[in-house]
Amino acid sequence: MTIELHGVAFSYANDATKSLLNIDHWSVAKGERVLVHGPSGSGKSTLLNVMGGLLTCSVGEVTLLGERLDRMNARQRDQFRANHVGYVFQRFNLVPYLNAIENIELASTFAAGKQRSSVREEATNLLHSLNVIPSDWSKPTSHLSMGQQQRVAIARALINTPEILIADEPTSSLDAENRDNFLRLLLGLVDEKNTTLVFVSHDLAIAQYFTRVQALSEFNKEHC
Amino acid sequence: MFLTVASKSLLNRKGSVAMTLMAISVAIFVLLGIEHVRQQARDSFASTVSGVDLIVGAKTGSLNLLLYSVFRIGSPTDNIRWETYEQVVADPAVAWAIPISLGDSHEGYRVVGTTSAYFDHFSYGKKRRLEFTSGAPFEGTFDAVLGSEVAKTLGYKIDSEIVLAHGLATTSFSLHDNKPFTVVGILAPTGTPVDQTIHVPLQGIDAMHSDWPQGPANLAIKSGAEPGATPAKPESITAFMLGLKSKMSIFGVQRQINDLKEEPLMAILPGVALAELWQMVGLFEDVLRLISALVLLAAVLGLGAVLLSSVRERNQEIHLLRILGAPPYYLFLLIEMEAVLIALAGMLIGGASLYVALILVEDALFANFGLYLEADLLTLEGLSILGAVLLSAIVAAGVPSVQIYTAASRYFER
Ligand SMILES: Nc1ncnc2c1ncn2[C@@H]1O[C@H](COP(=O)(O)OP(=O)(O)OP(=O)(O)O)[C@@H](O)[C@H]1O
Ligand SMILES: [Mg+2]
Image (cartoon, rainbow over all chains, first blue to last red; front, top):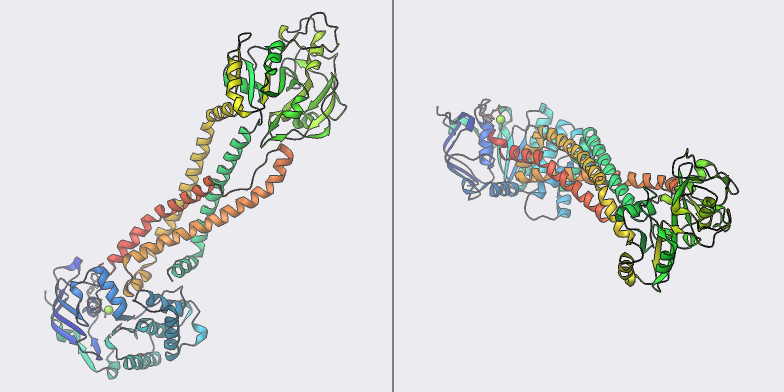
């Protein structure tokens, strides 16, 4: 299994009485493309942050690629995330004052061992296949449209060829046309690289793109 | 990449960054400028007289001797008999001697009676000799050579006639108005008390006093001399400067003079006495340093404030960098790097503008005051000031850096 959660319980420190996440068992196999949906505030983003080691759960095991995230220290989790997990969000995916290439290069500096020249080559390949035209590569990303920014964000998330890609409603700010365009390009690359994808959205209209569609409530038992 | 992020992030906040950069640049301009002027003042003070090995006068405090013989401030306690002078100068270790006779003035400027040795041997600064802008050293008894400021302020030219007064006040009752002196030479500016001095031959002083019935005893010529005639020898002088053949003999000669039985004399090393005097005005240096430190403090506090307010606007970057796997200390270093970049840019701007300013005023200062400001900023002191600026920028950025560090480590648990 690429992702495996066991007996995970999580609550925010300022709301410790209520356990937001309570997952007996949940796993994602290599190459799966999972869509998790659920109402606002149900804890979808929280789940993704626990999976990426950005939040640590009080009890339970979080295993990614066979490695126990819950046993790592903060520095090891950061390093693991840089090397193995890519993230795409609804927005604010890019440093606004850096251009597309710089944003992608920045992402690569935290991952282990890649040469700068090969990063640049891969970045241009990714941007080409994501239909970002070269004249947009050197603009500050704050000057790009939302659709363009989200496509650059895919390139940034995939530059370190992570085994796991986590997407938190990346299409919510896009119109229908841009959304389909984005999903086609994203899933094309995910297929090509055999990346495991966990995608969160409340938009079930995109269910067709995924191999598994699950409501968060199916595997998360909320306790009070 | 780290540098790119830091510098582009600064460029992204042009307005506030430009303001702090300006504050830092001004601070560096002031810091380096004050340090420079302080050093130059000390150097030019220390080189008020150079190449003179010993200054000899009647026994008094060494500062007092220095003040009246070199700075023409204060008055001598006693005189030196001419015979004693000749005896000391006869020592084979002595290369040359400049006798000095003080006590007269003209329009508030002091008159120094001396010999032509003064123009041959007196030097200041880095062994610079006196130079004439016009005319030549005195030859006749009633010839006078003016310091540059005297000539300029009083509007004297070659062949102007001047009347000297006994005593030091401008409105002295005792004008020697029957004995006018003729200006034969005007000296180039030196930036030393020489500029404010009127030089006349020793014989001129004595001749001037010879027909003065109540002439002061200490300046009276030997009885029997014709009034107005050039006396063979003066009775006494106020002080004299010695150049020795070898530096090795300085202390020996000094001891001999101090132990002289005939007359209680003292000899001082001008360099040592000048350093002592400078120490007494050391408070002035401390005040300058304090002002510099406060200017720097204000500037780096401004820098800290600007960076601190930027931290609040940087949640998006914190979020993003943490997602990418950047550890919290990366953000700490990012803020510190921004502070360092601003400090370095400030050094460049402040240093360069000071350099230009010094070049611009250099010529004017030298022409008018004989002050030579070297536009040499990369001294050890200058570099240590820059080091201190960098260090204080890093310390001042510590507050925002720690704040962004804590924000980054708790970002997702907020
Ligand atoms: N940093 C935080 N600190 C404390 N409570 C939080 C934090 N983030 C989220 N919560 C709370 O946890 C619950 C779940 O939030 P979460 O963001 O995971 O929901 P979500 O399913 O992603 O919602 P949405 O669909 O609106 O994005 C919400 O009640 C929210 O108020
Ligand atoms: Mg969410």
